[in-house]
Image (cartoon, rainbow, N blue to C red; front, side, top):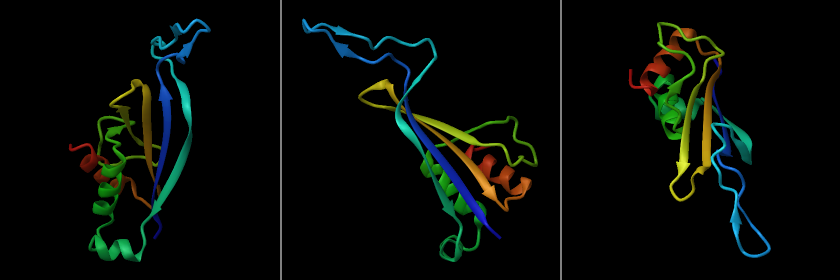
Length: 132
């Protein structure tokens, strides 16, 4: 069976770009009323469960997924409430504001379980990650 976790991260800003005028004045940095602009191109990584992971997590693919997703910082489900089954198109999301730049530099993360996950396994992972 093939179990994988797809993690996509993008860095955005909820403020207009900051600049300096020819006389040294500053402009920009204004809140964009919930809109955002991309600061850094998004990238996607994929973690695949293999025999080494099976050995390390004692064959527990759910524990492996929860550990990997916890490290990604995604704790918000795309669908709520989480029932006994979660469809393949569902995802988890999270965001991290830079401690120095605040909402001018926010890393947004989304996580999907892809491969041979059953809807029941997805639900178990989602409940564990969301602490439900």
